[in-house]
Length: 103
Image (cartoon, rainbow, N blue to C red):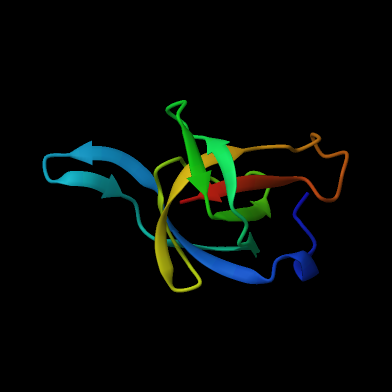
């Protein structure tokens, strides 16, 4: 179940991380994602297990695919996905979503 439209007040541009190549990091084609952006500083655990500081949290529809290390343009700033969490209830709530922590 998607988030209500009035909750999704921002649009971000996501270039999904696809791995490393001979010339560095490889990203997929950019995708626009409607979401809610909160500029809040907090300590998160990255996909590699390190504790890092996140300056922005994005909430988007459950089922959205945003891999860790993806490149994201938010509010004109290019940043990287530090961690992704899915606090969804399995469809029991209309507010099921994906939380993405950005550098």
